[in-house]
Image (tube, rainbow, N blue to C red; front, side):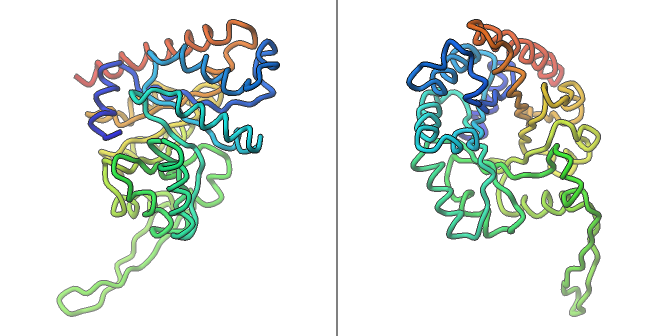
Length: 286
């Protein structure tokens, strides 16, 4: 899916909601447990119920990998069931040396028909670029995450000197900032606004205005709204740009809105509430 197609879907539907299919077999309603493919059946009903309220689905691969072959089969059935009007995200957080990343890219972009995959940037450019080589596909780079451990590395104060030649003289200007800021600055030279997004956790609301200044035109995937306490209003007010520039993900708050037979209807109701609020923020851009 191209950037233009994604933007068109957002403004046509009046929503930038991403529904997270972090499907835990132990949380599937009891009446589905005996189904031969309970995970896919659950996902199918969630997708059918929420299609009109969202523009994207994010599949957290860990919940499927943990089930072995059966989980991978449910993952593949799920991503193939999602219509091509909706943006699909493999939340896999891959990232390794170049030849390994090349194989990961083939897995999610060739063997599986995902539009995008989340990637960890901390092994540098050569671990990310294999994902960026696919036309119409997106790399979603971990930028600033919402977990407490973000303080361990992402929020560290850093500085570095870069040797450059100016008028025949070698100089070493110093660049300073948080580690995540170095990631944002560097990565924008690896990809473009049409194939590179950044993950920014919703609970980092205080940093959104600063991050939008670092990457004014890129899309952000924002997890952490709903069960994790992120504020949709704060995110939207600080980070929307002229083409929206946001995919805001909600997982547990939607897919586990009910434990009963009405789980799909309740999921639709919660997704509809998010979409209704998002529509008002999009209208304010006009």
